[in-house]
Length: 331
Image (cartoon, rainbow, N blue to C red):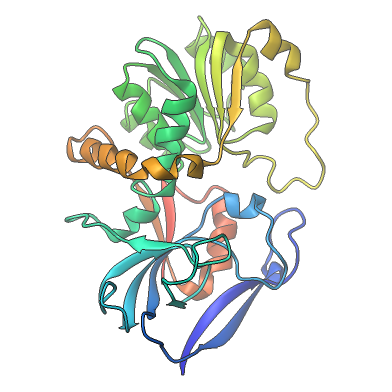
């Protein structure tokens, strides 16, 4: 029998996650049957959506990983090959590809040949966060050259890519991040204006950077920031709602001015999205992203932390802004 470790949700989140919300358990995997294989986690992803997503107490914490096949009775997945899959916070996983790929089944695919790039990028710029930036921005905001684009969470795995795509499309880009180090990195990516939201007046900063208003707003933060930003939108502006990290830990609904009359009077298009609506086009997005990386038009950064046993601590640090770019855990 092969042993594996997994992190389960021990108690429901209330406010900020804490150590007592998580429990490390050990499980034994059954002997392999024909067609099955076992994968050992190499890199695991931690993402803000994990805090907002509802999953049952006692179940494995959700998430994606890059894993290496360690035992196999499947010729299509030989020992040594890399796969990415939504196996959750597990150190080792048994996969049966013959099972229906529904929401209760481990979803997986082979990690493509990334050349000299680290396989962890399949969890970042060449994975879900990169596709979130690519499709969530281009499909919903439909930017045009010369327009002004606003991005918050600009030093994160998604926001940093959105801003660079906007520059590729000929836009002026305004970014907000939460520390001097983050702002310096965002500036190095080519953003036209970068502000530390902890140190500036957001309203005054937007008046300064976008005196003629904002055409496209990619929102990773929500809350008070968005209440202010929406007042700076131009007529027929487009807002892509990607996340709300400022309110994920809130114990009460955020209170702020109603946006509806502003949306009406400015005839804004406001749309939320889950990136998997474009899952059948991910190969297209990944190919374009890889091309831009190879051409030097897109830069990325990873915050790599060590240790499967440290998953909760690393996840909690992510929610407090400890990452620059994509945060991954090396198992």
